[in-house]
Length: 391
Image 1 (cartoon, rainbow, N blue to C red):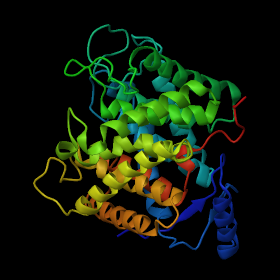
Image 2: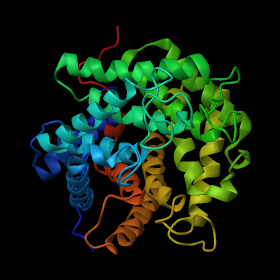
Image 3: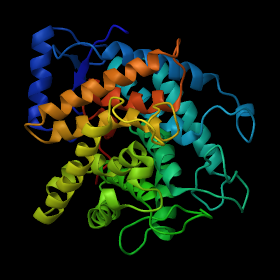
């Protein structure tokens, strides 16, 4: 079992008073600061920082070694949506430590995404490392996976000191968002998944991931169109109900449904709690459904399901569920049990990962890195630029 330690932080932008107080208390409790003064060590278990950075080092090394021969049908490394979760976690590692290697990896990855995007049809689409390739006009292309890619590029953008570089990445994400807003958002708020030959209706995966992206774009830019799109997407979920989604159901895909759907709920939690009693009530009802499912299925409690194996395509998304549990416990006072349950699940996943020695950058590792990032630096995954771009 890895030796573990914990870092916790205040949120660089949009920070609440209670998190400032926790951060200050942590500084005085331990008396140590990391190389970046935004991040302060606390006495809260001190056990998650080391395994998080260990996975970050593995991911940074593997992503930095990738060459062009691994794209366009060459060696199968990872799809870009899978890599995007590692990228977002590496951005948090950079915030924590100030180590340039983490941000350099994010920049190289984002540069590739922007380069591929410049040749994609339709304009604004991201290449996913499968499906429709740059320059092609036929083949499947998905809003859901591209939204994950966009969040990786956006995470890089908000950490760039160079104005021109920051704008390049931000413009890339906004171009993708425009493509989706103009073509794939339905009147009811749900989002279709682009060019998917098997299904053309509003779908939970594309809706949840695009909602997350548009919440983050609103927080970064202040542009109202993004907030309205995100809120309407959540309203679609609240009407549909998480345990009743179709075309791959919760019973079929388990943690995959919850991880992607709640990207939208987690990214917009603050907005959803303060934008009317009806939306707040419906939102918390969906959280209740999700947390109840987790309590009955995490930690290897179920077997014989499509998602029982944590290293399977659907089961790997277990790695991202503690992330949402930590978000919930941070936003909802009195939710210490949810946080403790998240810790138990993260420890269980660490044991699963440790069986692969040394660990490699897999889907499970990438999604778990997201959970570690929220545990050690609350709010950092969703941070804005230190200097806000809002008007």
